Length: 444
Image (cartoon, rainbow, N blue to C red; front, side):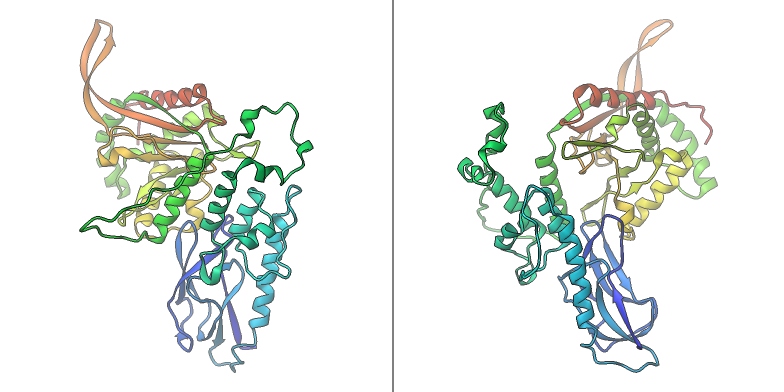
């Protein structure tokens, strides 16, 4: 055959689907090899999909707004110089491929505590993301079928199923008693453990004269959902310490011109902070964990995410993979590269996933401290405040003196389910110790 099927590319280990946000090419358009055919979006990043071969686009198999599984055919291209078959011929193969993906995902969410979900005979397609949430929250296929979808053609979206789960958790107690035999509950279970979480509803907004309504863009909607989800999942506690970073400031003032002349790029405080964080994580490895139900996953890799503000005002978190294997120069080059490509929207999904700990710099906006929200499924996130000159009492051989020092506040938000104040506070203090002990004579 002289036809080529363009498929939804694999964009990372954690990415199972993507949404088509814009078709760059229309049916009948000619496409050069490596030319962009469409733009897609995941819950992490936007990307362009090029065609590896040149030809004519004869069939678009999905519409803008459709959620497509990774590996499914999304377009049919007639190769240059070949005979063109009827556009509708490959459709059965595409449906079969999508059906196989559906079956695989549905089988994966089968649990002993819920009826086996199956799309057999079902009228709607459920994305892998929705099915994965159904697995985690023990939502049966019968319940999925009854959820009113707000997506394209009534499809159930992530927001729909999360709203369903939240409403279900706040339902009256009698409704929950019918879902499981009374005998299955431990006899000694305290009454407090069965208390229902109070339902909450966002207040109604009353418009006033001159108000302007601005719809959230796609990324802001995702950020909003993730922030609410994180606060719902993790009981957040925040600890604070004050760090004297005078040595870091003086060292950077001395080294930045040398480094920029030699490497052709600037050295900021961020890689210096990350180096101190990595050292502290090695001292306190139980801060580098994740929670999976009632299991604790202790990470071997130290992958540090660094929150970066985009020109649009949105936030993205590139990840420095295996940061413990890099020296300061390597960290600096990686930080600069990720930051530059983040602002240009050139990051791949793999580069913003897999983080095990996150660092955010609220000092860049002149803030002295912050209480950041954890990036799930991590259990901690650290914020660095602005560096200010302050009078401080210092101990010397001649006695106490008051000196002008460069002072910064550090704050650590952590998941109190698994990180107690002792661990969180000790870890944060250790980071500050490494900052204060910075060798001012260190070679760059």
